Length: 421
Image 1 (spheres, one colour):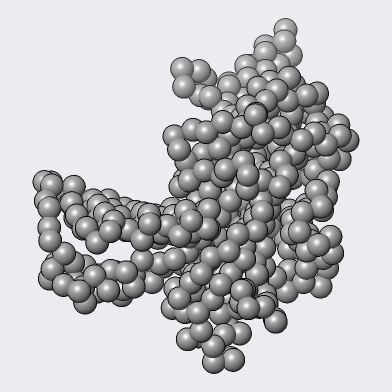
Image 2: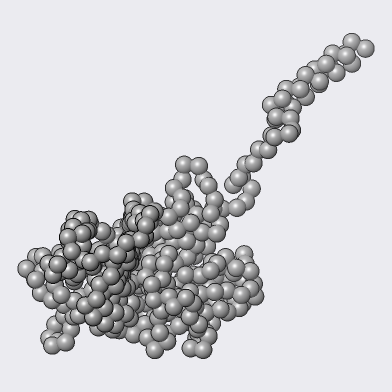
């Protein structure tokens, strides 16, 4: 039983939460109420809140002015989402940003390697392999800096290229709301205000409220492919989520663990101050709670069972260990010498970019690594205008070809009649 438990702990991947600004709507009307949400987990599911004391900056930029979001403007929803309700101004393109303080997390060697792999920090993983330090534990300091760009009305303004001065941030080189599905968008990544070259960037999208079908074009959410992954450094923890064929959810508070399976497999890991959560969405739903050595296991399939973690737990852990999960779905891009990448926009939807810049810390007795996280979100729709769409409604009416042929026939008959007379 003890070996089985060790296996379970081994497969609980210590991956961190991404932090995103997700708007309830990215297309708004002047003076309309808007809702800004902080998703700490994946872009589609937030796992925990961001406490106010963690925020170094929260700002809205529009009309050439930057306005701070006051602490009292924030509220919490469902214990997972921090949000702000506010009234937008005049028409234009706006920017929202949030920057968080650095936090430390201590990880065992294998857990750290898994996190690097699943969150796409492949340069650091390669460095550890080359230097033979894969067996070394890590103490990482991480901080998150996130932005969103939204459009109010039809007027486009230049606020979209505002540099907020965060330690790391994405800055578009073109107004996202001048771009349309089927095109592309150039974005620059800045580190301490300077272009960051040779940095891995991941881009993906989900269907937005302006979703349309464009024939052969790709649509929807590229996370709904074979699986969906999400990792999270939440309040000092990590979270990993997959939407594959099963959904697992683990919560480890004070050293405890909770594991739930819902079939089809979605994994989500959430760590608050050392907590870890891992969630799978399978066909059965398992929930494990390991607090202070207690364990409970329940399946929500056709019936609900309760198990002692013995042989079944052991075999389940071995099966999970065989699975490989990544958090790098979507477009994988590398910044050029100017820190630029070009994001493809294959379909209507809300696009989100993410990157983790990590370096080793030299000469420190406390830290081994330092990371800076950045994300950006915006919405893209197709172009509206003459020639953009053709709509033929023939139900209950005369088909165009019949009308044209009939018209020619009538004109011909009239010509012959009047010519004869």
